Amino acid sequence: MSDYKIETKCIQSGWEPKKGEPRVVPVYQSTTFKYDTSDQMGRLFDLEDAGYFYTRLQNPTNDAVAAKICDLEGGVAAMLTSSGQAANFYAIMNIAEAGDHIICTTALYGGTYNLFAHTLRKMGVEATFVDPEVSEEDLNAAFRDNTKAVFGETISNPSLVVLDFEKFAKTAHGHGVPLIVDNTFATPINCRPFEWGADIVTHSTTKYMDGHAVCVGGAIVDSGNFDWDAQGDKFACLTQPDETYHGVVYTEKFGKGAYITKATVQLMRDLGSIQSPQNAFYLNIGLETLHLRVARHCENAKAVAAWLRDNDKVAWVHCPMLEGDEAYERAQKYMPNGACGVITFGLKGGREASIQMMDSLKLVAIVTHVADSRSCVLHPASHTHRQMNDQELLEAGVQPDLIRFSVGIENAEDIIADLDQALRQVK
Figure 1: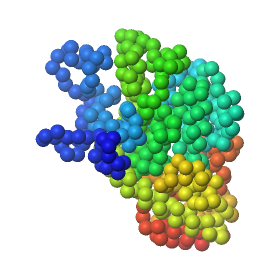
Figure 2: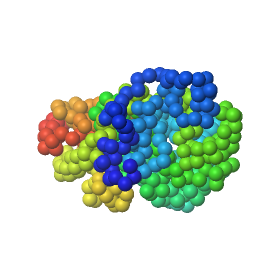
Figure 3: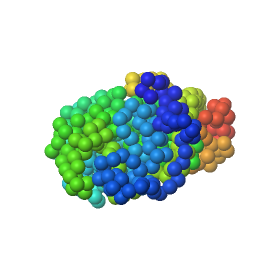
Figure 4: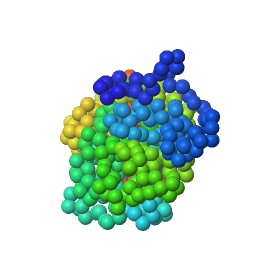
């Protein structure tokens, strides 16, 4: 549906029913699919025919929702995963193996940092972390002969650093590797990374895409722009025969769909982590209102941030949509219509004051979540990032007093009133 605006794509893309078929994408709640002959099934396993035979690899509900996300991002192929963590893991391990190296910005979600810094290292993939404001010279110096990808977040969680797409894309491509970007916070409503040089996009669909805190999920979208064959020796996994599928060469057989096809038939086959069809169904309902909700999230967040900035108990506020914010100029460049509904702030009383304030909230809930319709708050150093040591926290832009506030789509005056009464409880 490339000719339609993104608002229309949110509602219409992915599922185009034929005569007599359900208007709404149905839930194909089946583990397996029937065929009439052994040869039909065999051709599916040989990748000679397209179709469904086992939901761990593909499912019609999942494919319809993945197609919608792909259309929203402007990609050529996409797949759903069971979580955002699984999406980031697959995105890297689809092109890396033991003995390889990746480069990441330090401004990452704590779980992603831990995945790359520790878990992947145990699997033989080493990560080098660079400051998001690193100079091009120093960024170039971080590359090695075995570097396979560069990874960053459009808007980092929770530090709210806006990625310098052009710098990281230029450098990655100069070394013959793709730029992979987690676009969870901005969503394709506010930023489409492929338009700024990214090659692969990941999402935790659990957040704004679902928007209602009902289903965990992830997605990977390929732009189709990276030329794997031009770097054939570096990415032999895509450009050389795969003996587990009778010598198929993914780039030859599947063209621009090579990357997602390999991720599906290799990683999903061997590791699982498929999103359930029921969760994909719920996700699709969320996607239909994504364009409406994101705009309201941003409007409310900007109003709340402005109010906090004027409160005498607040030490600092970070919101990329506020003029004067350190990320404002870059946010205006890459996402002029709004950044996200997440803001951060700290109190003059420090960590203890932050905890006291959060415990006094009535409307806003303390939950281990972010980016859904309900306003919620978290203290990352005590919660999502508690596995990181003090140095790692600082490198990720997480101060001890940092409060991550996910501003919902309630009435902004009610949200501010709750903050006001909670701050009055702080001694």
